[in-house]
Structure formats: structure tokens, C-alpha cells
Length: 145
Image 1 (cartoon, rainbow, N blue to C red):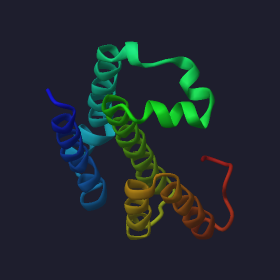
Image 2 (cartoon, rainbow, N blue to C red):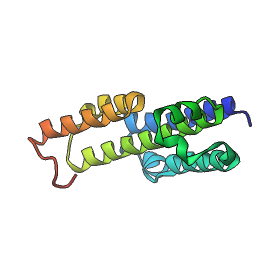
Image 3 (cartoon, one colour):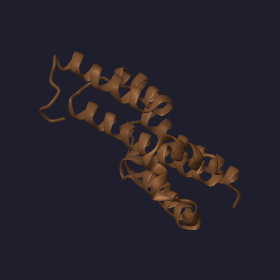
Image 4 (cartoon, rainbow, N blue to C red):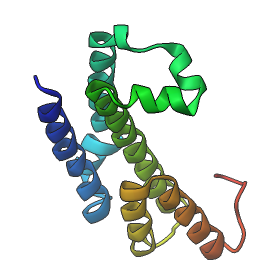
């Protein structure tokens, strides 16, 4: 399958998870599909298959310099792997934000902007959620994180 096709399928697939996290976080199917780790695991398998299929293009030393990483990301398969990596990890962080907010009784309405930022800007969404949690929970950061 072409890298462009895998890119499109991965994007569409992960959108199911994000929509369920945003719209129906307590729905039983969200628990089965998203909170089970199912979507993230499928993306991890895609990542593994991409890596195995293109392992000869990866030099461990490529990750030790900015130039090496830039060169690595001139290869479409490497860019696709990087993208699938982001999709899986960002969704996992979104899952954590929702479950953590539920555990600490933080309104889902406050979590939705954090999820949107996590989806689009990863670490900024996580930072936003942590700030929201600090404000709502009046400084509780470490305990029961």
C-alpha cells in the first residue's frame, strides 16, 4: 500500500478515537474502542510494520544530530512513521486527560479545549490540561496524578 494511502487511513482511523473522546467520553463503546487502547495499539502495529518494512533506511546515528533527523525525514516512509507515532502518542495522552479528569471530577467541558489542543499541538494540549487541573483542583499536581 502506498505511503499516502496509509497516511490517509491512519488519519481517518484516529479521528474516530478523538471524536469519541470529545463527544462521548463515558459511552460504553468509547471505553471498548478508545480506552481499551485498541486504536493506539492498531497504530502501534502500523508503526511496527512500517519500521520492519523500511528498517534498512534507519541509522541509529540519525537521531543524534538535528541534521541527521532532518535527513531522515526526507524519506516519505520515515515521515509516515513519525506521523503515525504522533497519532498514537497524542491519542494516548488524550485518553489519559479524559480518564484523569473523570477521576478528579473535572468538567468535561473544560477538558474539550485541552483535547483539541492535544490533537493539534500535542504537548501544548497536555500543558493546558495540567494548568486546567491545577486551577480546578487548587494546586493539586503531584498526588494522584
